[in-house]
Amino acid sequence: MFKITIFYPVKHNDWFDMEYYTEKHLALSKSVFGNYLKGIGIEKSESSDSIYKVIGHLFFEEIEHFYNCFLPNKTILEEDAVHYTNVKAVIQISKVIVWQNLT
Image (tube, rainbow, N blue to C red; front, side, top):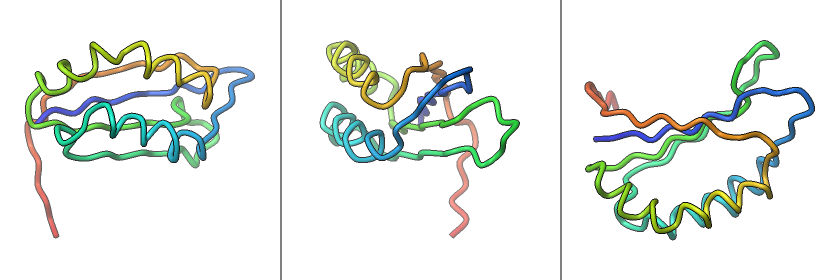
C-alpha cells in the first residue's frame, strides 16, 4: 500500500475553502484516479499552533497506479487548487510499512 499525503501549511493571510475541497476537488480526484484509489482521508487542524491547516491522504495498492493517473492530469488538479486555497501544497509519497485494521 502507498500513501500520498498532501500537506497545506499554515501561512500568513492563508485561506482554505473546506467545502469546495471536500465536495468539488475530492470529486475531481476520484474521477482522475478511478478504481485505483483505495482510500481517502482528510484532516483539518483544530489547534492554533499547528503547522498544517489541512492534510489530505490518498491510498493506492501500487505506486504506479498513482503516477499513471496523476501525471497526465497534474495540471488539471493543480489548477483546481486556486478554488480552495492560496497555499502551495507539500506532497509526500510513502510506502505504508504497517497497516493494522483494528475493527
